[in-house]
Length: 135
Image (cartoon, rainbow, N blue to C red; front, side, top):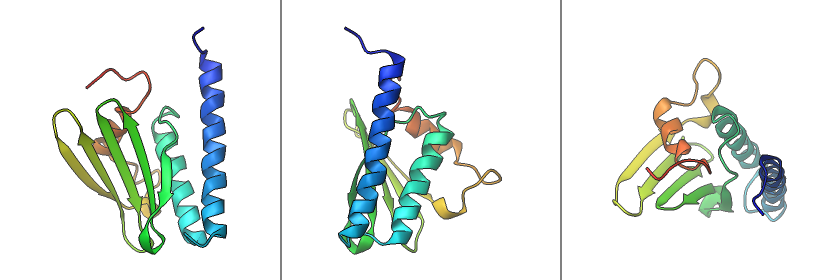
């Protein structure tokens, strides 16, 4: 039986809660500090809102020196968002079939309504919407 939009939304909400829990756990374990927890959660909320809540919850893991890495994978598309304590975040995209690469520096701390997420970034994020056709 196919899942409904409600079931999909509930599953994503649960994954979002698990992301929040995971960030707090990484803080308790000393992998990231409280500022990185806040930055990582802000990044997720801003990207999710900017995509009209269509962007799936990313996989996440701490990196060296207190960094945080989010990843999305769908078919041939791979996207990473690496967040740093004192530098802009780095987005990296790779199409596994064509080999096309793309990179973008994103200053999450300074994004707001007056300085929204650039269209170029939103275009890459849209590749990971579940209903997106293969691009």
